Image (cartoon, rainbow, N blue to C red):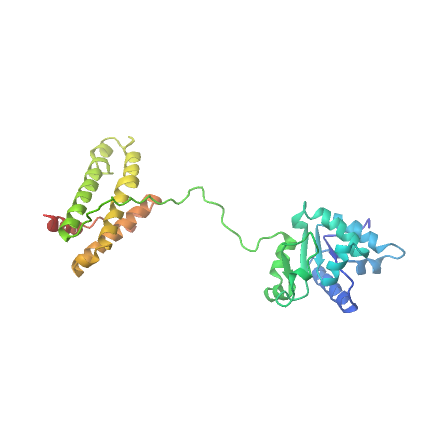
Length: 294
């Protein structure tokens, strides 16, 4: 063993000669792909007069990865601690809780027609099994991902800035809801008036902001947008969408301009947008509301 540096060791049950041949082919396939894979049959070719079961028991703890080839017979031997499989399984059972990434459970049997419960020994329930029949269709992508500790999907790092959305204003409790177009437009007029006064008093072109660019007015404006203007806009949208039947097609078109502006205005509050991405407040919406509310 002094000259062996096992990257991968294979634990399996010698069920039939056909199965042994398949395991040999699998081990050779891994070696062809650049992985120093060892199994008992390889050791037997290179050594004589040694206990190969004992050698495998020494290889498993020092191997970087251990592939367990599951079959119903492997399960039986592992659970009853029979023969070489039973001895290997004692080590596996002890290590697997501490070294999750070291052990790979695979099967040559298609899981589409084989019950997992017939393959997994006690202690390994719930663990992932690589169906080599399925993985072969993808060039053994999952197998090599596990062997090389390389993720299949490279996820982005978590952005330090969380995207947030402004809270929506709760509609006022009203036993006598707005019924007529004039009442609805009069309500919207008051809201637009509030938004306009706040914009004039604290907005980027307000006297405070222009006279003292380093003042806290920008922070105040951000707070006002989030807590008052955006909820006001959302209330207007909700109110008109609940009463679309009162609007003519022309008025609908003007309302949609306001809605596009309001949604872009809110997105810009959450994450800064290019100025071209935020349409200006449509003055014809204000004219429409004020005219009907008079």
